[in-house]
Image (cartoon, rainbow, N blue to C red; front, side):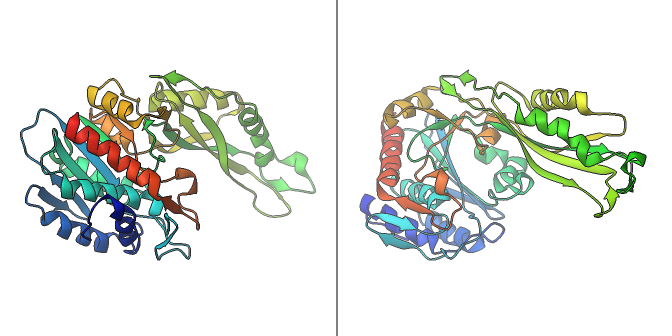
Length: 358
């Protein structure tokens, strides 16, 4: 995986794409990355399961954490990398092996940065949050993740996406009374009872708050409905699962309270509202001088991250973080996923400037 310089970044990414690393099967790519990192005498390398952390210890005033996940979604007839006219096709090319390639190039070449550096390669980001390799590191080796700021190489098309919205998923279970459909007046249709909640969702007016000059856009959506017993039975139970994407000015508790209050008029004794999973949002945190410098060097408008990313994990541990990486998030996980050379080289150039001149 040696590289001769900037012109090889796309080829370096292609080499990573060719190493299959679907979630829970990251071992081979982690082995490869570990071997490369351990060959650099200026780095201290620690492996925890399928997670890798490489650090410089130069006694600098500040420490910057660069982090990225090694896993991808399963391939969709795109397991093999293909480069065509400056565009790399293949699973994980955008999300986020281009970001990993930048991290590896920086780790190999920045032997005397003006800040100390921590490179974090973690597993299992694309599946349930409870399995996250980054979460594992924060639990068993939080000392390895200490830093002044963190930059995640998630695909942002070489623009800074600050903070992230939180996500709440809950299920509302409504009760009814079972009866024969020939005599529905003898029962109560639980599926019909969902109409009030669905109408409230359909007419819901989401907020778009501006936080640290970044405009977030909340969203509340029904994502699943379950109900019905048989074609001739009035259902006595029905549920709707909803997903609430909430801005960083709400806590997870605030978000849950808001949704419960919205649904309260439609609930009766015996109905159940169950939180399935929740993850806190993260504020942009752009007031840190290093992040302000990154924003200035990027030369582009800072956007709010509308999805949830691991910047929230860093923020929860007092490390302000942003998303900044090559690749277009809108084509991530698709069969036609690709990465262009220009944003890959742009991210590398901006980070080199930050880490050698800041």
